[in-house]
Image (cartoon, rainbow, N blue to C red; front, side):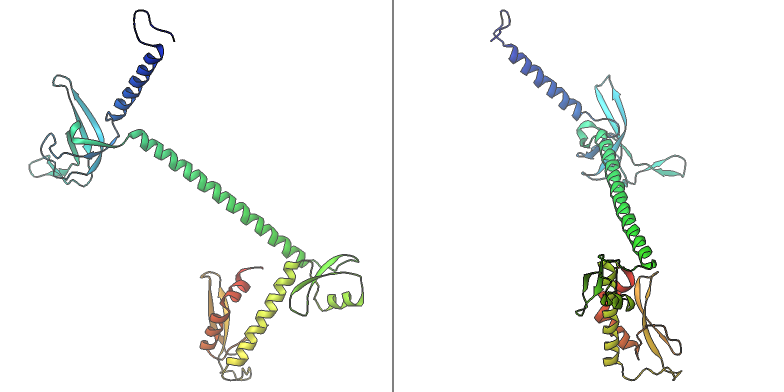
Length: 289
């Protein structure tokens, strides 16, 4: 171990002392109050004796005055809602939230640099939020592109070629795939419009058909009279979706019949059908799946 000449102190010991002094200096600098620091009042005996607030109030240092001849430092702190009024004219006063304290009256709450770091963190958080929004937007764009592609494929007159896979709605109401052999069975399915390019298309049509049958069965079981379109004064109730308000609505007509629409003899019956089939109705009007 190396030793200093004529001193019983090691080099390592000196380095440790220097490190301790450095840490102490940093702690002292950290404790020194600076402009912009947020402080808490721990003693209500301020310089002017006009502080009407309570211990525990917090404010921000806006001015520091070092009086060298008496070795004192005065801190002007802006404390919101202290309601101190200062006379500026014979009958005019203004509200002044500034108070002057000695250092022993104050306790550091947050360094001004911490505020800057908080602002930096806010920027980081905002950036992350924008990135998340961009990701969500990209996912939405991808979903919309798929929907456009599905719509385009539906517009095309498509029939499976020999050896090509296609989908049908089977006897159980499920989407099932078949392999085209250009047989009479394949041609029959094509002619009956039970031939779909994708499983999603087949499942969607199967869902729509099943919901239509459910609503028709419910109307037959719950309507208190027969719907008769020759009776002009008979009110017929129907369900539609308001895309602006994003709600299911019951409407009525007397003489206008829409293609494929299920009608009910009363508003109460129509609302009960919404209550029973709400999830399916929302899916029908809002989703493409």
